[in-house]
Image (cartoon, rainbow, N blue to C red; front, side, top):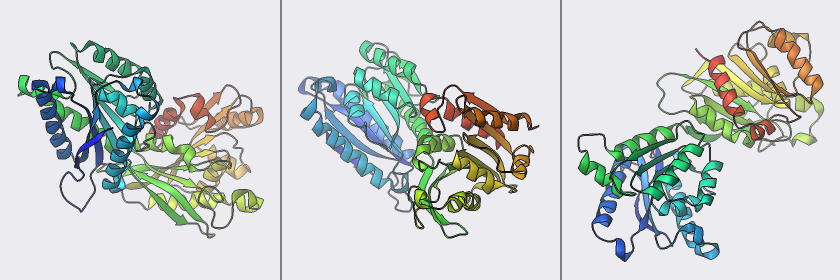
Length: 443
């Protein structure tokens, strides 16, 4: 099984604030044949890297995994002890990081990379990967493809041919813009590259510094998240996720996410993270009757009139997000799906703080005043629909053509998918929404 060899939970020793994030540093435990000079350089590399990560404000837990046999051959009960060790390390680090417990990175070296990745497949807290000469099975490479929203940094020395092949595979299959690969010569393998670089290039930026800087940037991009509640004017207690970006000196625009009537806030889990990575403050709510916002009843038990008052939830969300420190209250946007889109339009009607509405399916104006609002050019609108929904598509097209605003967009997808179903059919769609909001909510 794996061995947690060192835990450094608070990089500064201070109890005033939690670390910015945490790192699980995984290396293969050396067998008798590997002890000696190479083992010494590996151990020194791990020490130096740990120090650099702590200096960057990151907590570190070091784990050694058995090197006798690749994970691809460790099936069933043979993998279970390793999975338990990784789970314990991740949970311990997440707790120690407090409010930043969802900002965990995994650094894994050589043969241990395969075991570390496969044993962390269910760890939602893990956001970034650094692979040092990582040797990966086809299963582990497939897992990284599934984790496309998490960036990967690959470091490898060219003489290590098997690791070079695996690392280039990872880099070229990653679609994340922050993923990167650095290929060196004559540095050895895994963590010994850290010590070798320091010996060969003492005047150049250290490899441990490069890794620490990259991880600090990527984990900061996750933002600060917490569950929040606020109360509407008619007494509904609304639950939501508030996620704020880090390292901003200027106020940022805010985006409110409103799901459909048959879902809850968790359909926006990925979009929530993409938005905060792009620098937005995000409020992702369960509106009345859905998710945890059920203090006055569940959605399908409510009257038609009570359901329609979801616009009051949107209105209260504007007030709540606008009141947060660091949020520019004059630049608020919405993303709404079907009934969520209706609530976004009707809740923002006449509110000058709202500058952008991304409407995903099912929306038709209730009256001429509402039509005049969305076509006025005072608010930028992105209309999204599918060809199979002919009536809605025609109405949205008419709204788009009646709008003088140059930032208003009209997107039509083939087939009959609606709302968040498009997130699964088109892996670029959520990024399209983010890029449009960056334009629409620019200062």
